Image (tube, rainbow, N blue to C red; front, side, top):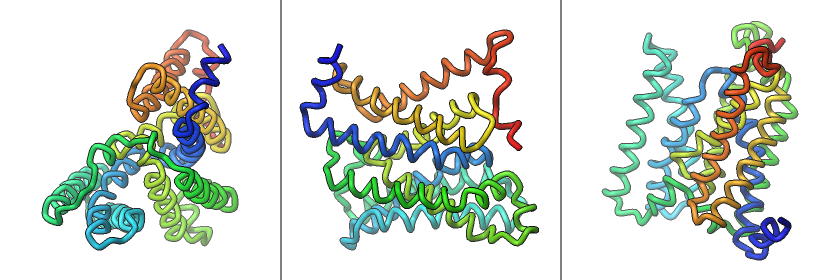
Length: 282
């Protein structure tokens, strides 16, 4: 039994992969919890696909790709908010339009600018190429986001559940929204190498959604979600090692399996879990 756990750790690339996946496993559910309770889960998917034009332009001009990805993703979120506020177009329609437009623009720019971007790695991730520097960078970004969530937890909680009330109380809702979008974007950028842009939404939403079924408070949802995210990430790496599976999809499948099992437990007659849910959060 111990040999099964220890053998993969003898390889440096596995240790690096586990290190960064643990950080992402903690970070994604914390950020994803806000998306779930605001009923904006697909916004994470939109912003994940909006990074492609920025990656292409940054690669063309020799700028760090994370800078281009951040700017492009934030522009996507601003476009959704602008269309939503200036017209009667519903938010889901605005997100669908933004999602497809930015992704198409990114693919076009890659062709026109003749970028040497590895689309497979971008779409599906490649956690086994993680270096120690990547771990440091992920840890620094994760620390900043988690510190911001801790410092502004009450304000974000009020804004999340009652935006109109928060504005009436004088809270800077515009800055809170901007900060939340920036946190989501940074989380997506740090997660791309782990699971890729196509699967990052599953890691943002999956563990947090499972925790949603188990808890009644937002901070509990974040805690349980992070625990599930870490377990899913580490288990996915081990499954990838022993069964020669792609690591990103393996992590997502573990997370999704935990959700399905938890969901089925809530359907049992008289199940304790069926009485849970953040809908009762005060």
